[in-house]
Length: 457
Image (spheres, rainbow, N blue to C red):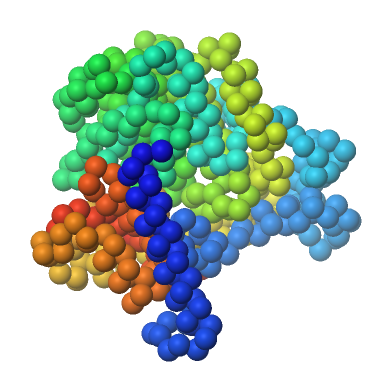
């Protein structure tokens, strides 16, 4: 473990102790301008008050308590879905293990979902792997990269800014991180020359094996258009890089004239030169997006153009989890195969999804309007995801202690639970301000912040 990781952990622990002290003071009757500490630092939508989708919970409840199959007060499509899911569980019970890569029926549902999303493009269930969330799926692929790397340390190109969990995952897997800058003034696009310089500077130090992409962007909120995606695919082909594509916010796109396009769809529409050679692992999760079921611990990854001989190794790595939680897999099945038009639950399901998306869109407008009134704050446009990425200009006098000072003040004055990581003398802070969530990135006199747009429904 690196010194920077140790510093980060110590600071996170100190902030946790600070939060615990405030909770204790509140319990003892100490007067403060707030009544409780609300921790939404993990982007957990339900923790912030988001209501669960009714159809999802009805199906889960019936699977957990099969006597509800006889309850006429539940919609018939709920009972049919639960009955069908139980038929695919060993012993007809959600308490039984599933296959290490997931229930076969859920793999088929996910493959069909991908095919519908991508305009009929085929998806093979054998290339679908169910995992305990997208981070677990990503870790599996990272371990594969290490296995085939030889003596030179493998590396992954990652965007700057990036999800706050990504560097720790790379470090735990034994890979080096090669940051590449996204250009905020150009809509968070990248420059090919800059990517090539990153590759060139890595020669002799490490071996670039993959490039990580987040679309819609986490935490930037940008949504890549077709031309951008094509450029990334061409670069990956030229440098023989695996595409690691995080698409967990694909159903959270709300920008005007903005549409989500999957990397897989664009890859195959570029023709056989690319569709037959570029390897890709795409990730999605039940935790993120409009459903926000973080506690169910379920996600999937689809592997594209991987040799069939590699797939058993993926399953072997997944066996370390024995099997993903069956309840989470059932939730994933609902996400991939929601009620169809004409079914009893369809109308309510769509109304609840629309309500969440409207809340998210409204929070974007409210957040940007409010933040634009603050001195020294710049907030670029947001097209999707659940974050506002904010640029704050701080007094130069604060210096290198800006992170601890700012985090502590936010926690004390605004009941904000925060986390910080230190990387290359740049401090990245993630925190939350009730009822929304913030993530901060602090440098010398300059601070970038991310506002999570998860408000109570």
